[in-house]
Length: 155
Image (cartoon, rainbow, N blue to C red; front, side):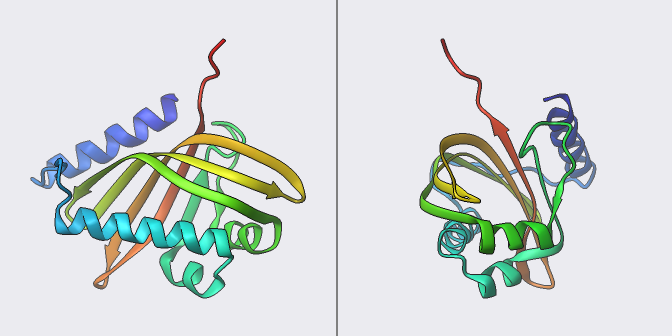
């Protein structure tokens, strides 16, 4: 948790130094809607194992953190795509309580990620907190980072 808070505060500090202010509104702006659409397309590509889309939308420097716990090593692009194509089978995926923040050519999505399926034939049905970071490079949005957090269980 400490790492995630530090990362988010660092990003916000960097953005504020650039004189850019985040946008977040009840009605999504055009850019926020674009990011939401990309996120939905990404979820569908993950669900259907669309290798072409995954290779196009996920940046070369992509990393996935928080899969096992906060101290586990980040998963890099190649491993993420390989796991998605070869080991993950989804029955369903969805995002709920989605919030989009845009900071110039960077956007973040905060959401609850509901997923049901199997990893290496071991079934799962869970909801996690998700933070995706998108960056616009050469006129094209790409996913550069994904963070999962296990939600606390309630007694």
